[in-house]
Amino acid sequence: MEIVIRAAVMFLFLWGVTRAVGRSTLGELSTFELLLYVTMGDLVQQSVTQQDYSLTSGVLTISVFALFTTALSWTQWRFPRTRSLINGKPIVIIRDGLALSEALRQQRLSMADLLAAARQQGIRSVGDVDLAIFENDGRISFFTRNDDPEGAPETASAG
Image (tube, rainbow, N blue to C red):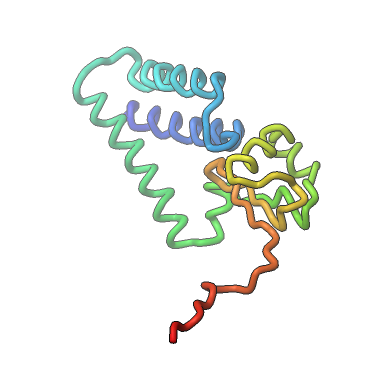
């Protein structure tokens, strides 16, 4: 029973740490974040099992982590208001062609990273962006200003 409690405590701790560290910029892990997560994996194993390498300890630990992951997923599905608490919420970082410096600062997203993400989407200038949203998974969704009418272009009829 002690291993189950230890696994539950470590799961909640890891969830909190990953929420505190924040989203990965541009959907990629930095070197520091990668090292942090790899190191956490080893430390979790040691702290949960207390160097107990038995099959039972491994099965219990993985089962508790799987149970908590499923419980969080079910909670989000059953109680939609918990989604922002569990996963975070998308943040608007550009509105009407202007970068929102406070939002960038809060998300620890540099202007250089923002411009690089825009260039990867074929956007030359922040001024071309109507809206940009920093998604929960670290990606940035750009919505550009478009003067073209909505929908597919009409084709001239042959005749």
